[in-house]
Structure formats: structure tokens, C-alpha cells
Image (cartoon, rainbow over all chains, first blue to last red; front, side):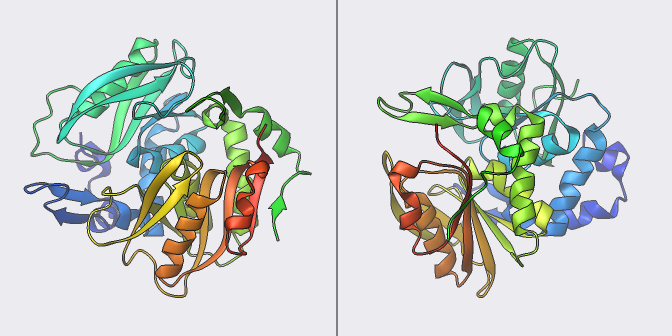
Length: 175
Length: 182
């Protein structure tokens, strides 16, 4: 659900955050309207407001794990993890994490890939948050959720800066 | 002038949380894995605090982080010191017009890109990555920032591999690290 629907409607920070995102047409291929968050990252107030909204929501939910999806999830998740005192877990493209990993396949909005997580990073009973910059089809977030659930964590919520309402989301992301 | 935080009591905790994985990504490489550091909220916070304490009064307006592990440390530092975070990315990830710089890795070669317009001429920049090995990636990062007219104040890494002498490839710019590789 969107923050505006979730009681944050009229929060003055949302407009500043939305305005700081740049839409780049036809990237990475024709027909895609790319939501570029780099202009949000280079706006210290908008970036801080973004993190604050997530931290305000999650700080009292006993979250023990914040998982960030490579690479743009890495720009938001660690700061959230630090602010709420949770572990940060990077969920990475294949072959990047050393040592023992588990892997989950998924389809992207534009292509397909695999996501990996370290064995032993997350314990049974951990309460987890999954963070990415944007949700499109939900394929990546679903793969992330499956990875965490396979090791016995409870995925409390998935959180993204941007949701694309016009792309059909076929998985239920919020529990 | 290079600096290394040996005397701060937080350093031992940080060092002890870094895991060495032998023969990754290929035989002979002792990989310095920071993911175990990220699993310890106190050690991760101490890591960020050490950088923030050093840079908060240095008028730094840009923190540039190198994909992908620089994206883990750079943004919390940028947010804490009120600077812009600028991601330096692998090719074709950034939309729109970019500067492109080629460089040699410890194991291979690659390209780094930065958005045109991310940095204004005269800005003071910090470059952040998890680790410095040969210094090739950091040197490419510095070149990108300087081509856009920024002044690189310092390079900051959690870990240095001293035997690879990366600090000698930083065009005379200072390097600040928290720990040396094990």
C-alpha cells in the first residue's frame, strides 16, 4: 500500500521526495519510463526525509533484519538498519557473496536473474524487512521474501521508495 | 598524508567482525568479507561513526560511493554529514548522460560511470569504498570527480590491503582506513 493511503497523506515530506525523483524515458529500452532515484540521493533533505519515514514506521516493530536488494536497495537499507538497530543483509547477484549461499530465481520487469543470501546470516525467528528502491512486478521482492522464509525468518513487510501502480502486482507483498 | 585509526577502542570490534574467505573469487585471493560486520549493529554503527566524526566539519558536499559495497557505507555517511550521495556505477546502469572512466582491477578490468551534472565545479568530495586493494577503482573514481570539476578531499575505506600499495595510486591524495587486511 502506498504511504499516501496509509495515513501519510498530506505529509509534506512526500511531495519533496516525489519531486526529487527524475523520470528518464526509454531507459534501459524503449517504452520503459525509468524512475531515477539518484536525484533523490543528491538532495540531502529529500534523502533524509525518505529514511525518516521508513524509520518512523519500523522502529517499534521489533525488526531484527533489514535485507537490501543489490544494488539500489543498498542505498536505503543500511541507514534504516542502523537507525532501528537491526542487522543489514545484502541480497546479491550471483557470485558476489563469498562462502556458502542460498539462491532464488526470479523474473524482472525486463529480463530474469537470481538472488543470493549468505547461509547463517539470518536465524529462524528473525523478523525481517525487505528494501528496494522500486517495486514493479514484485518478482525481485518475491524472491527476496522466499530466501528469508526458507531460513525461517518472518518477512514483516516489503518497503520501497517507489511503487508503479500501473504494473500489475501479482504477488501479495504485505503480510 | 595517510591515516589509520589504530588507537580508537572501537577498532578491535570492527576488525574482529570482518571475515576472511580464502580463495574467493579465485585461488590465491584472501577475500575480506564485510558482510559479517554488517550483521553486528554496534560494529557497523561504530564504523560509520568513525568516518562521520572525521568528515563532519570538513565542508564536504559530495560523498561518492563505488558500486556496490561503497553503496553500503557511503549513504549513511552522506546523510550524517548533510552531503549529497553520488553513486559511481558499473556501465549502463545510470540513465542519461554520464562520464565514463576505464580502470584495472586487482582481478580483471572494468569501467566506472558518474552522472553528468551530479557534481558541480568546486565541490569538495569524499570517495568511499569498503576496501582498497591496488587503488585502481579509487583512482578511476577520483578521475570522474575531477573531470566534473570537484576537488577530492580524501578517499575513505574500511579495509586496506597494504601489500598492494593502493595508497600510492591515489595521485597524492590522502587515504583514510580503519583496519588493515588480515
